[in-house]
Length: 605
Image (cartoon, one colour):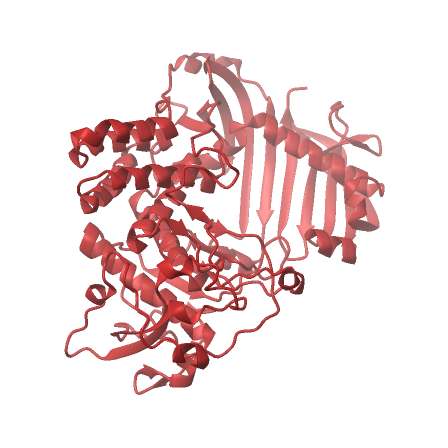
């Protein structure tokens, strides 16, 4: 899932009426947004009007004095305005019959699209007393800014998304590990084409420390950022490299920047504090915003948005430049193995058409400084000749389960399984490695060559057994999961080894986990272990676990209900020993119903 992430804080202050705030907001209107909202929201003389109270005047949010006396999860009067728009064209339509704020392209629901809105209507208008509730303000605000943004895309950039978007404000979504309601976040889920805006925290400790945070749905920059992830999903739907997640984040920030004509993100949600600023060359850690391999997606996104914002500033036709950015991303569809350096190259190719010659050197310097180097390509295919060296280096069988309810909320399958083995690895050249991977599909084993850029952790290509480059989106989606595990085999193996060691220690009441979890009982039964297609007489050790209340809550660790360890009589000294056998796998079960099982079943002995 893609999102703006914030530290989870809580505050016990509840929402309050808006009547007093609106009395002080009779003349304040937004004047600095690049595209006038009046032109975006022009009404036909015959159209019925709808009054909405929304969070406007985004530029004014960058003021500490403005927020001085504003309580958590509220918005100061200077940022609120009453806006008249046309009534939703698809209110209470067949798609979501209980939802009022619904258009042909999207619907904005309150908490859940299966429930009624949190307001009532009088003669087609939101009831006056409901209009001034904070829940209604958030829902209306998301609807208003989405409508404005989609009009902006169509009128200014000649682009209209096609997939229907489900949007939920103040959504109660539970963390799949902890089971608690998630807060202080907003995200786009490509699995079910939805946007979620989560509640703000109301933690007493956070309040006592002076912390304040707003709902994500109050912030126009957050709304447009998340809607831009939805747009990016249209522009570049099928890629395999994690770096494209950074491009996605940078693009989302940039689109919010140009729409609001403001380089700063998160001003409303963070009570006037800046989450990210596309005009600043140094990040929050004091580092110059230059590319480095394996960056976190938001950090990489800051580099993308900085390069775009600086280039736009030097462009003669800013509208044309914005279209050029979208065109460059669409052009990357031809290569599902694209990286951020591919995007850099496509931008540099297009920049001369919208930047004057006197600024051309400066613009190219920006891109070369932030993203030095070029996109890496596969140096040779000699690894195909080494297939006869294949042996079982290491292989795992994995299974992840979650409740049907959680699976629906996250837009994923309730049960996800894989069974793969790394058969051979070959050095292609400096910083390039090819891995021959076998994956069990139905009753057969399919083999793939996966070639990695080991320096940047990008996938340079995935080939089938017939040495054909795989570009089919459905096949890539399946094989990418294998590639992610193989890309850093040492890390995957280390993570597995550390987990089974920690769980084995816990079964004996030892180790760091014993500080948080208490063993309530252990049952040992026989288990048939499959190693290298040989069946061995192993053991299944089921450990009943209870989280220690005080320590567990303070550290925020998940409630584990049980850990199952699988053992086999194999000579693997790197793995822990229980009852004279080595631990070859584990299953971790959480109170939420989520479970993860990983079992070693192939190894070079």
